Amino acid sequence: MTSQPRPQGTQQETSAGCPVGGRIPPPPESRNYFTMPNGCPVEHPLLAERVDKKVNNSRYGSQLIQDLNTVESVVHVSRERIPERVVHAKGVGVFGEFETTNQDWIKKYTDANFLQPDSHGKPKKTRLLSRFSTIAGESGYPDTVRDGKGCAFKLYTEEGNLDWVFLNPEVFNIRDPAKFASLVHAKKRDPATNLLDANMTWDFFNNNIEVYNALMRNLTDEGTPSSYSRLLIASINTYTFTKKKNDTEWDHHLVRIKMLPDPPIDPERDYFTLDEATANVGKDPDYLTRRLYEETQNGPHPTWKVYAQILDPAKTSIDVFDATKVVPETDCPWTEFGKITLNEVPQNYFTQIEQAAFTPANIVPGWDISPDPLLQIRLLSYGDSQRYRLGANHDQLPPNKACSYVYDPTRRNGAYNMTNYGHVPNYLGSVLKTLKTPDHYNISYLKWQGEVMRYRSTVEDVDYKQCREHWDTLDKRMKWHFIYNLGSSLSPATKPVQHETVQIFGKIWSDKYGQKDKNNINWKQELEKELARREKINKDLGKKPGLVPGGEKGTPHYIPGTVPDLSTEVGNPYKRLDLNLN
Ligand code: HEM
Image (tube, rainbow, N blue to C red; front, side, top):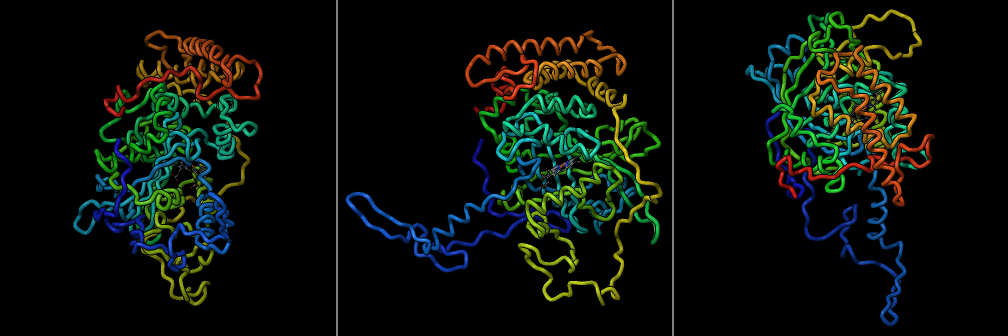
């Protein structure tokens, strides 16, 4: 692979409204000498000021605090880190554009300005920033390890920034926000050992069965894609398209969004096998990051077709606000309305990507939130995380700054405030007399009347049924890989936890939730065989010092088994993909 590109600030002047959204000014030009941060010229950046004495060949040097340049540079290094995102910490971001491809259809449902034709009747292009991430690993964690993938887009529209904070796979692990903290903890590190622990992960899964629909997808090779550009991406949560009918009335349509790579996904080529993905952990822990840079800079540019699913709750038996479920296409069809192309690498990772703040609360007129309980908690959680991570004025940072009209002079002060509205009054007083209603805005459409209820969701038949329906769409190769991948993930857990998982899969694979497998394979037995095979290998490997095999101990062990498991065979992932990268 070529070395990481270093863009010099070329601009894509194609997008309507905001051709340079997210870009940063060019770095200062060197006059071949250094200065202090206040501009005071420095004689030489390596000249130290110290009490200095040479005795024989040794130099005694007491470094002085009054050596302003050295002191300043050292203390600044200690402040280079900001808190990483608590989830989705490892990521990569690039710029691109959204283009409407079906304006006649989309304008029936939403009057969002960026989706309407331009003054010549042509589809508009909207500049965007995208960020792709793994979910559980820390910012330095290898990116080919099996995980869901975050896919966030910030569209710099002429009516404000619209954030699409989406994911792969197409369903989420939970539907109750109260489970979020447990989900995050179960997939991260054990509090006592700071090690990953298959036991705690699978113990959480087994006691929250709704997780299995996302798991079924993540445990196929879809969980180890060979490029971020080859992901099916989904909004998962339900949003609302709005369209103004007259001064007092709006049309509202519930909607989900999905993006499919163009050309379409070829699982054999676009997904790594477990062994290939594991090999990459050692070969290049930043493989997916590097590959997205390469594709964005050198092409073929990552491209997705964007689809909307207008949801009519009366036409489906699925709860359209349950993030763990797909709404079948046969109930509510998908329609293509746009295209995303990624074509510009960032100038500076920290400024433009680490400081990027995506939140589903960033909406625009025509594109609204919905009473989806998971989404509702997300509306608070992202801004809250960003106020902690980036500060109260994160909206003024280059990747987050809207190019459109922004005006609220009551929003004042706070750390790193760059503009602060100068002398404009910071309270609502006489300005109220001249305030007008804008032409275009969203209104809440639900006429709520009800009582506060205490609600706890329960596991239903549909939680098993959708897992089985997805299983039936897999070909034989994907199914065998699934057993192999599942065996690897589960084998480091203890026997009781393994047993519970096997029973749950046994239920998913039972006739009750689908047709008998046409190849007459008993997948439950195959899973048991695979676990037994891995247990034997792990036991042998575990005799080596420092390695702890999972699976063979009956009670939770204090030191978790190795994750991923020891018996993964490491092959050459590039050979089959014809990438010739060795
Ligand atoms: C209760 C449910 C959820 C909560 C509380 C939650 C919370 C969070 C938080 C706190 C972050 C870090 C934000 C930051 O520091 O900038 C994050 C990142 C992210 N979440 Fe969620 N999340 C939830 C569910 C979801 C769902 C359902 C999706 C997608 C449909 C999703 C997609 C993402 C993505 C893509 C990122 C990374 C954004 C980036 O690249 O900066 N999350 N989430």
